[in-house]
Length: 143
Image 1 (cartoon, helix red, strand yellow):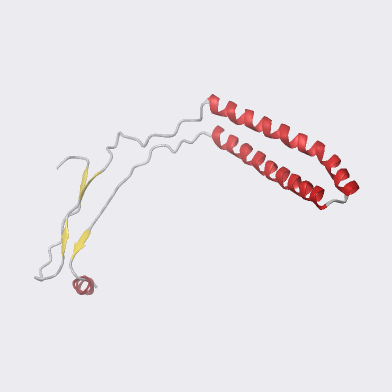
Image 2 (cartoon, helix red, strand yellow):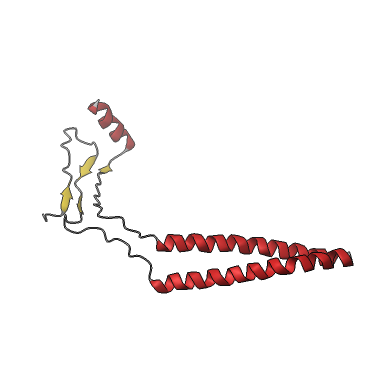
């Protein structure tokens, strides 16, 4: 048996016909092997995020600047299609603002260092082979 395994011994069941427990040996990370931490995001990704954020801000500003002219046009024409276009423009600007916020949130998440430190993982498993009646009888006997 290797040093990095857990062995769960099978209990001694004196009653014949009852289910059996099997021992399980699962590999466990050694004490000196830490779980690798995630590295911070590289500078290229941060530059790309900043570029996209800048372009998004420019589009929002242009849409906001053109909005008063579109409102005047819709008022003067009193045509349903012009109000439909205005409604679409307002919806698009609203979605662009949401996207702009999401980009900012993504940038702050990318900047944060994801370091979870060392973690140890232990897996333990006990397998019962038998019927549910055998299990119930065995559990009654443990009480």
